[in-house]
Structure formats: C-alpha cells, structure tokens
Length: 184
Image (cartoon, rainbow, N blue to C red):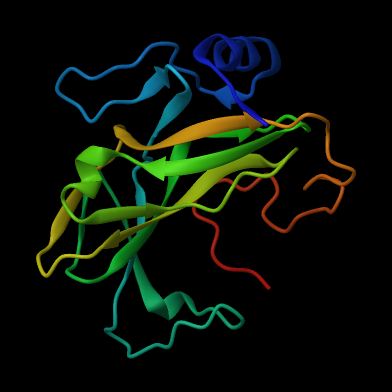
C-alpha cells in the first residue's frame, strides 16, 4: 500500500472528480489551512453544525438515535460546549477510487486546542460529503470555523482492487450530503 502524492491527488481530482470542489494548492493566509498538500488534502468545514446537548435528557444510542440529542445551527462559526462534541460535514464531495482507502487525521491547530477530529476511513468506491465528529476535550467552550480547514485526508492505494467495495455492498452512508446521523 502506498501513500499517494500531490500529483496523483491533483490528477484524480481534475480527471475523475475525486474531490469537488477541489483547491489545488494550500490556502493559509488568515485561515486554518485547506487544499492540496504534499501527501494529502486538507478539507474544509461546511457551515451546518449539530451540537450535542443534554437539554432534554436524551440518551445517545447508536441503534435508536434520537435527534433530541442535539441542536442544529448554521453559521460562520460554532461554539462547542465544554466536554461535548458536534457533528458537521465537509464542503468537499469525495469519490474514492476502487483501489484506494482514505484515512483522516485532525489538523494540529485544532488538536493543540483540545479539539479532536474523528472520521472513519473512506472505503474503496465510497462517495459523499464526509460527516465529521469534533470533540471538545477541554473544560472550556471552543470555537470552530466554517469554510476553513478541519482535517487532512491521506490516500492509500492498494496493490490491487478489493474483491468487494463499499459500493458493491451498497453501504448505508453512500452518497451522503450534509450531516448523516447514525444508521443501523
């Protein structure tokens, strides 16, 4: 398995619409960086946020998920309460090639503030906007910014395509747009 460089990512984004919209160089002036980097792509955060709250004393259960567990906000920024988290999504829409697995890592700017990004791997032939969980591990409120970098995706190409891809399995999160809540 090889990690793919900027030249491959650019070619796949331009020729195969692997990332849309695609920013072909890293932007960083006055913002948390986003766009193409040496061996990855820094995705941007959209302006829709689902902030988890305990106002209605709801139980978070992945098998029976209730939308009473969160409040929805839209805007240029979002405040994550202390020791809480928010669900959000990327601006970018991804189309993963059949022989590629994508791993996501958080940006150091947010990590150094106690904000942890969690995304499961993007499997071969998955496509959609990526739902992201951002945990505020601090005892203080924390601000995140829409339209700026939130995480970096690393593209790992396998030595051969898998026998069965996410699309072949008809995965439940295929072609998602916006924040996708847990599904069973």
